[in-house]
Length: 161
Image 1: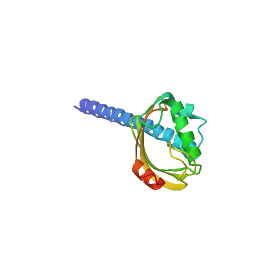
Image 2: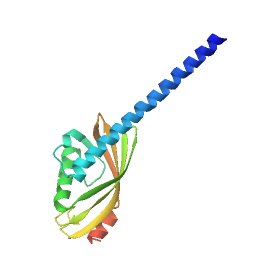
Image 3: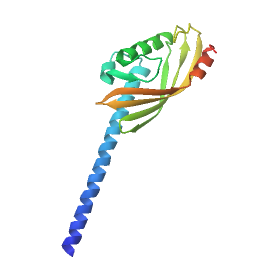
Image 4: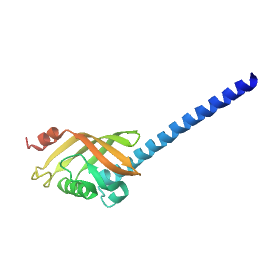
């Protein structure tokens, strides 16, 4: 009886260790993905540095926002134009959540549109819009992106509607 009890206890402890280890590993992957997005946001959106996109984006990066071209090159072109049209562009990352291979980011984009941007001539008006960006991470790089942005609020602040 004592041998069976010891065997059951050892088996239970082993099972618990495996389950906890698996959870810790998943948490580590989630933490890694959050760190990737944090570093990416700092370099690209805070420092406005597009030079290292190959470190963060897959070449065939999938973009679900219809106004941004596909791939790493499309991302580069879109944000280069944004930074030129809004030289005082600022980004504030407010919340970041990871689940498996997905990272959800809530932040605020703001600045003053002093140059052409989104086919809109310079308005010289400030804007501030909140957005949720959702990224899928694959092999340590951003593979896919979705976003929810209040475009109506943006255009209203720029005086285009």
